[in-house]
Image: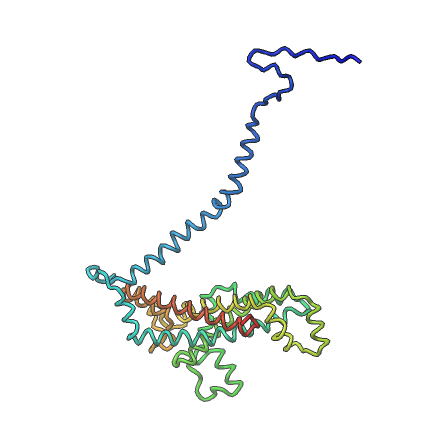
Length: 338
């Protein structure tokens, strides 16, 4: 049997004679650019998209915080530009002997307790009711949010009329219950009366907001859990505290921390509750003056920016400690790990 051999292919100039050698193709420039564009899109575009937030935060958030810390360590008065220089911790040491600061701190904590605790408890109850099958359920859910979307200035001015001494609705309702028939309550004269009035304003505005947060968390709880609890004889109240609250614990902690931050920075309600808000006195004797009001008064009425900055940092530390303690306590009470 004879075999035939293929004739060698004539080689072109500059090309080897081996016909089996692979033919080189020109590089796919379009594919290379697509690959580079994909890598750029994956690696760098996310950072470009979030860069505006960090730039704005650096300019309007981080820089004021750092600059405020510098001001707190200096003598800085707007009414006496010559009084400048490094003060160190003198502004912070002054806080320890400042009666106005401790009075404002006590007022802040008093209003905070009267507003935050009832606010979150009532929000849980309202959310539990809205989580049931009700007629016009959507209208009720929208209705509880109306106080939140109402401008705080408008609602506070209305409440100042409600808590008027002689013509207020609050005293009229209490007189129907036999309270204050002979002498109407002067809501601006004493600490407790003014604290209750301001706490009522805060609760009215934020109960619905927190209730909707709790309601959103309750929607994720399976219905068969409640059905099994009902079979075991657990009533609605027991289901709320034994099932609902432990299962929405992260949202509860979130609202506790959020309410702590907002409650200790309370400013608008006590400011507008005063007959002359521009003074930022918090009453004739400072009976409801909060720390935020005192910072405003010291900084923009007394023109002592250095001392006001020290107060703001003291308030920051107080909020940090109280928020951490409240979150820890809430986590323990909610069934968190010990």
